[in-house]
Length: 234
Image 1: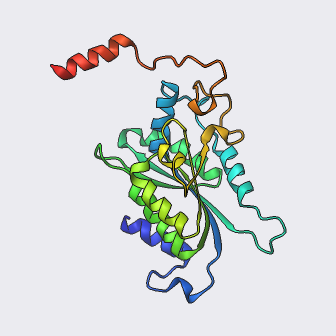
Image 2: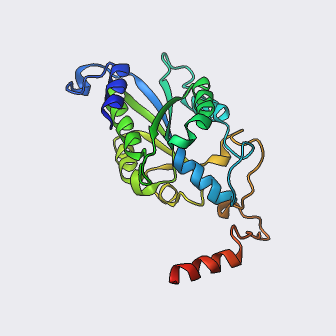
Image 3: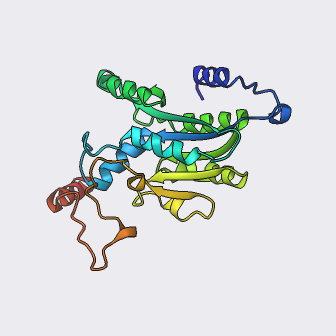
């Protein structure tokens, strides 16, 4: 966790890292975290093309689905709801991403933006740090994670589920085997979120095949694939 992010998160919570969570009754929280680099990359892989405005998810529809899932009819007090998008920002794309960031904020999402200065710069640890802080400052009732990255998220998310948090992974079924196969995590395909996409994505899901089968077109030409193999051997 970066120092500035830690300070901002703790200050917003009023949470003292040195205090025991049992020192006071913690408010119930439903938390959503969105791994923007992973979702963008897996969306491109699923549709076999660079996503456009028409094929990108609608954050307002996702917010409505998330808040609706937090409602507890008849409860004296509803849980708090919070949603955060975590993004890497290459310096050369900072200007073009500004409008996207402001749109997210207008839909009620906080945004954690980190400059992508090296190819391996990532925001996964910042996401995990944020979840950890919220798990201490609040009673983390439900955690919704938009990411297909099982390498970094499977173990900590299953630990939270064992501790009593309802953990829901939302991603594409083609790339989220870690969540689908887990006995502790719940999985939702992102296209099953009502209104998440303006039109159906150009994909064939293996978990929803038509009875007569379906053709899955190649996402790269045969010549391009063969050329890439030959170039690697050379």
